[in-house]
Image (cartoon, rainbow, N blue to C red):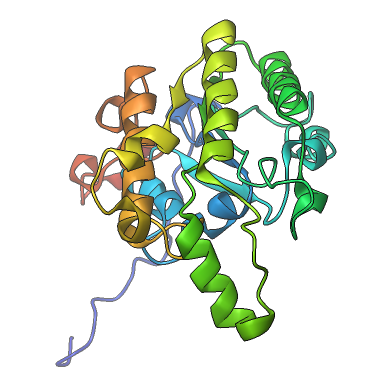
Length: 268
């Protein structure tokens, strides 16, 4: 007998779903593929509210795990030390796709406050090439996407410095949009040479009037609107490479495919 607010008594014995003989988790598609975001602070911050990484995780919800490997302040020279740890050649399944988003720190100017991060543009291109080649060694089917550094709003960087340091703020910009464009050009050129896709954020953002404050919060890092641009362009690029979320399988059945009276059938 049931009382108000109570649930029916559970059966005395509950039988968990049983895999057919010889079946593995792969037969159900249980191993969810990964999309790895590898980059500097713009990648590290991508899971903040309004971030492009969080939006990407939502786009591929239940289809792929979006994994952030962003390292604030890093350039491509330092990224090489991480490569074999993040993307080992054996032991775990390689990512389905990887974005490589470096250059904002490599392009820091010599003789200015951020010169410690500077990497010559020729070395920047070579470092990106080494990262791409390593990923190709990990998997010949991985989708590899290069992303150029974003544009720089020099006045925005100056305002940001004054907000932190007041009268002691540096007088000369530590980054310029012109130099960021040089590094973006090398990123694009490398993608063309290696026959992989590239998201040209440096140019894309500057197509919009007022991009300096619309897309950049401090002259370098992204506003929610700037994150939305990156998300849109990355999704478009992944779709063009065949990774359309709507065509990718769920890791487990959609609830509409589960028979309430016999749920185990949906998991065989």
